[in-house]
Length: 98
Image (cartoon, rainbow, N blue to C red; front, top):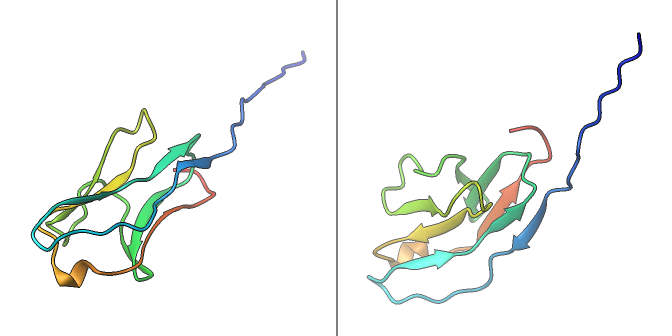
């Protein structure tokens, strides 16, 4: 008996990458990140420090990943912006399974 399995493989890639943004202290800002074919784990970093891999970022009450998994939208929403939020942010996806 011969069995054949076929797996559709889509390369994950950034459909929308973060861009430099400005915000007024006290306002809200959303940093866009959209990934097509996501198979790895996604996280946002702030000045190279990992903020977490879940949409509700534990320990960061003003930060949250918004959007939908179905659309591959993992944008970072920062409310009540402060001077401490002035940093370098990266949306990162690992190559491994979720």
